[in-house]
Image (cartoon, rainbow over all chains, first blue to last red; front, side, top):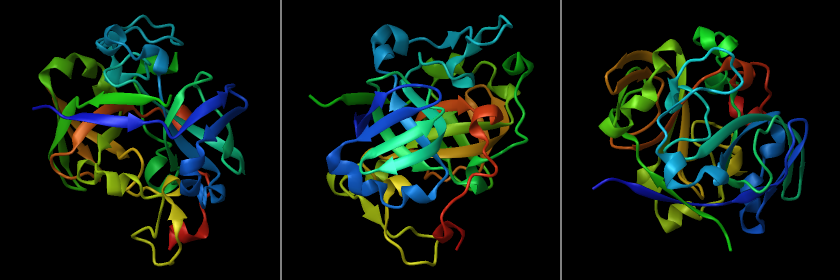
Length: 139
Length: 139
């Protein structure tokens, strides 16, 4: 039998914005933030709640937006919000940590998106500056 | 009412190993891999299935392993498998893509771990080589 996993939200995107977004971690999870202020960047996993329906979750290929080349690619080869498990991932700059609120830069999520997880960004494993990508990505 | 999300596995870690691991994507999701062979690195999200129980999911602070400094930090400030939503994240090198099998380097997951998602690694947003981390990380 296939695996099913259950996610609960640990917070919510309280205000969105590429330049500045606020993520509120729910009170019962605040202790899990201890030490996060020592990191300049964090990884935010969130739920594409507007795509959480059977139709969007059965999409396997898309023409990615923000690229002028018209190629159809698999959703595992792009960052489309339509995907089998609508989990979004953004590497963001941590601007401020105050009580249970993270103020971040670079979060591409809508207001109201449930937060699934927060992880520290550790360049040793997470930064691959010379990773290569297909040509369509750069257009 | 708080959000609950449902995850399904899109694949499984068929063989583990830091140097080489094999990820099998289930046949019904294989079309979603189209184009992934153009990326040198990918992001694998998987489920810490051995920690998927109430006790491990209620852990909020840990003394991270692999670091000699004895500091207790929040699970959102480290990569502990014990966390509210047991989702693991690894940036891996893509060594080979063959049919529905990804052969990768750098996957820190156990054999049998359910695969939640696969995303392309795009340095523009994902690589922050100069991100800083707290002192305990480097010990």
